[in-house]
Image 1 (cartoon, one colour):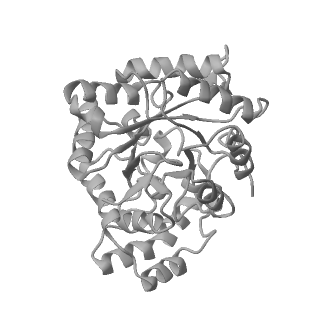
Image 2: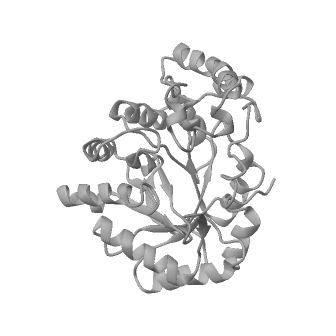
Length: 332
């Protein structure tokens, strides 16, 4: 499988990773055994990067990964492990962000314990605390490196300007952001800044939270999912329109004899050697469709047809609600 470098001078990993939010029932019910099966398939397919967070199921995702490592000790050397911290709750249970050195280290210690690790390969600040200078946060992350608890660090959903500020303190290995045929705002500065600085762009939701697959989530299921149940792109009348607009992509994939998810992944891989998609799934067969995307080279003609079918800005509805927008940095 094609490889991607994690940050300046960093290790090489597979050009497709696993987004482990699905291990915590974000998109519907699952079991630890199902998560183990996906991790085992990833090992068989040569997928080496796994991306999780302390808040995915409040530790459930990390626990599943840790239990798999206990069952398969060789898996720890196979996987490049990334996790995140920085999202917290106040006394009333309201979401808040804490990028203090003390909070990040305390949450990291819990993650290491759940996964049975001495250190993680990559540690992100999950959401930037706006009031705290990013230079201070970056220095705290350097401190965790010096303690040997993390090998590299990054940020999730920050603006290019924040990345440049962080880089004045130390190299930033990765920035995680939503990026797909559904969501292309990152092409207005973040893709380019990451390439310039040698920072890996880790692309979450690369198949549009199921919209860019052969089997988009059922309208009957969506209301039961806390995030998507209120998400503008997945509520009516937007969802019906988005299903209709993505049907030509499914038709093109069928014409090419490929899964639609594979086409979406292949498109994203074509965006740059520094782009790393991390799709999540609860299905081994769907995971194989995603891996297939790394094996396809899209011709200029097919790329042009994809752009014609889904031009920039085609989706109805914002990618987040106003509440969901609290935390990610808007920059365009």
